[in-house]
Image 1: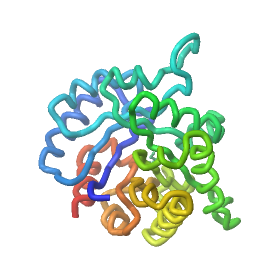
Image 2: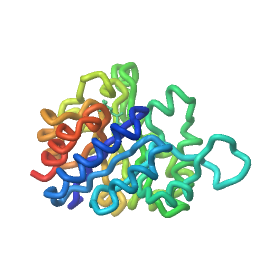
Image 3: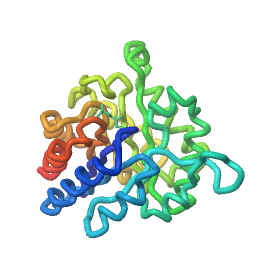
Length: 251
Ligand code: 13P
């Protein structure tokens, strides 16, 4: 991968006031970044606001969730074409919080991935093991299974133009970052697994690491050969911290 990506998942933290301050600071600070694609993922009601704030910036807009359905009588849902209408380019699918707190199965995640692709947007497919699964040495079975559920529905070729985010559940919001070696080991294994199905896809797919990434840990993580950037939660709410992670991705 030539261009690294640093993506900020704001989760359910936003207001029109804080969005303005945060986005304006990011736009100003990101103007000097090169060779790194910065992306922000605000909560859905604020996509229009953040789209306007980002208007003259190279920072891309992302959404945290999407319906698996195209349109119709699905109260409360937001379709991929609606997201596209607000300038969204990237969409998170299968974040561990969606899987564990909202019961999203591998099948639903795969259907959402397909809906995002059908609308011409780029899915960021989140995969990762729990602490119990890691301790049971099931990490690779878990992440490969999560990947395969998507491949079974859409075919492996669709991964070439998608983003995968490896987010070990035990590292999310806990302050426990996977070590660069632990992360690299899984990223390499994900690429090796994809290579058994399509070598070109394995080479092209962009794989981000997520889980307590901050300005202090980013340098070493991004130095790993199979880590193509980061998906950042908490630290993405602080403009200076997020920009510092962007800088780490450049070096
Ligand atoms: P934290 O960076 O807060 O651990 O969150 C990671 C994450 O879930 C990003 O999607």
